[in-house]
Length: 204
Image 1: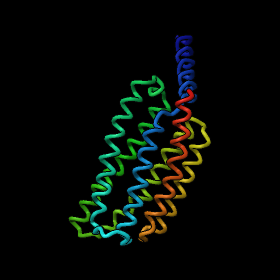
Image 2: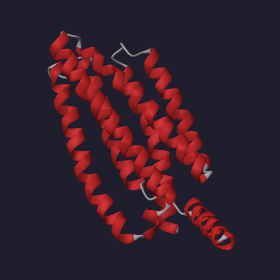
Image 3: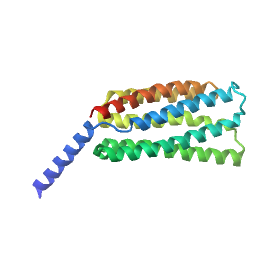
Image 4: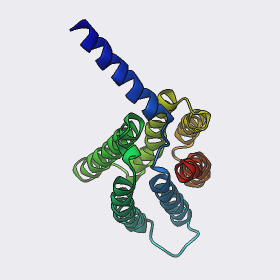
C-alpha cells in the first residue's frame, strides 16, 4: 500500500512538472479580448469626452458589441484549441481557463448589479466606471496565479502592470480620460503576455 501511495505521488508530481513546462494556449483568446477591450475603452472615452457626435448613452451599445464579438470569437478559438492539443488539459491551462472565466463571471455579475442599482436607486451612470479598476484587479489576480504556477517572468510583469493600472484608474475614476489611460495600460499589459504565449505555443 505504501509503495502504491509513493507511486501515485510520484505520478502526480510528474504530471505537475509536465503541466508547468507546457505552454499556455490562451494567447489568441487573450489577444482578442485585449484588442476588443482597448477599442471599446478608447471609443467610450471619445464618446463621453464629446469628441464624437454620438450621445453618451451610445457607450452601452459599444460594450454590447464588445461582449458579443468577444464571446463569438472565443467560442471558435476555444474549440480549435481543445481539438488541436492535449496540452489544453494540463494543470496550468485548466487554471488559466478557470481564473479568466471566473473573472469574466464576476464582471458580468457586477455589471448586472450596477444596472439594477441605477434603475432602482436612480444612481448615476458613472457607477459603471468602477468596472475598469475592478477588471484590472481581477487580471492582476489571474496573472499572479499563473505566474506562480508556471514561474514565467512575463506573467509576473503583467500582474504588476495590471495591479498598477488598477491603482491608477481608481485614482482618476471620475475623469473621462480614465478610459484613454485604461486603454493604453490594457494594451501594454495584455498584448505582451498574449503574444509571448502564442509564440511559445507555436514552437512547442
